[in-house]
Image (tube, rainbow, N blue to C red; front, side, top):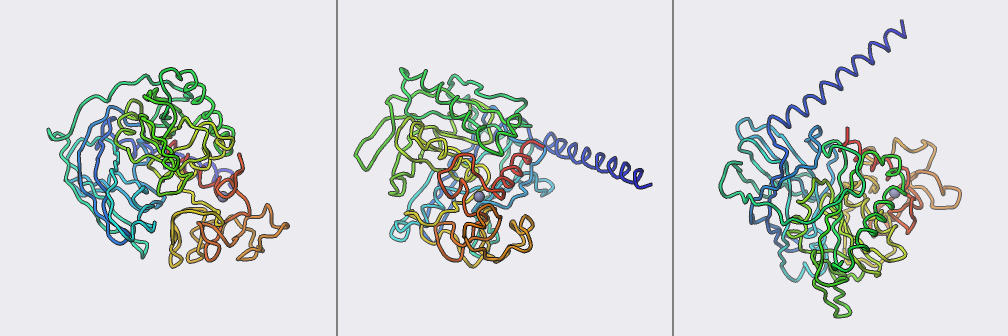
Length: 430
Ligand SMILES: [Zn+2]
């Protein structure tokens, strides 16, 4: 009887699962094509106000994202893009993201002046008129409407030109982009004489990804592409040393005056290069020996190629960009002030203010472990609630004493971070 019940139950679950998949794919085919609609805008403001000013709409040839899971289930990021079918008002696509503007607005500079950041978002190309909304997370942890726009996909105002062509290579390929996490590597600061180094580096970094858990166990769920975009000059900008290089993706150290923060403001060019292949995540690999990198959730990732810690930086930053993980360290000089409000639960899966701990890793803890948990040796490999994280030593807690989001260790994600990464991989691939 029991056996029959469980077989029946399994069959039922199988049928439900199958229908759900079919529902997702049907919805994709009903509302979208396999191309990309790119929305470019300026994100403008200061520490207390921000605005989104549209610049252009552009059609790009590939859609690299999932065709099943169209609605974001994570609730990560400071912003989210929401797409509604205009005729029925049905939500047909959503995605959370963060931005360089958001980080800047927590710096001291934003208290004294305003600034404008060029930003872009991509969605699958719609078949009928859509309503696009950008919503901003407010201090009470709910979302407010920041921009609303009707988009008719047949409009002649959507730029429809082919991207500048670069040679692209499959560094690691395991199948159909709709069912894989696709990462596009964009090399920056590699000249035409350094093409061999470029190819060797792209292979080396692909190897780094699969050298860490849980990526190594999910190797068959990733595609890695490299677009061989060549730069005029070798290296990258080092403003502190007054060194400036003409490179294709315009990367630079000392973003927000933090020496090791290696980023680019030129997302427009980066997207134009990335459009040569289908992708979910962008990773800019910069031809430099200097220690540094950076990443923004569902926006882009960046790191230098030849530092002795490059493997760690590469994996650490991808934790931010891909899985929404926060920094678990708190004893380091960064330019941000009050990055995580202690009045609400941070959205990152690996930090808590204990305001709503049930929504975090409580179910992964032994119920006898003290909250907060003392960071002493006997708790070294115990999931707990350790004070200090997110750049502050008080009031913000991390799940493990040590982790790749805390310290320069390769293949050292804590169980909570591993679980968050695995959930994200599953979202893109199931
Ligand atoms: Zn962790």
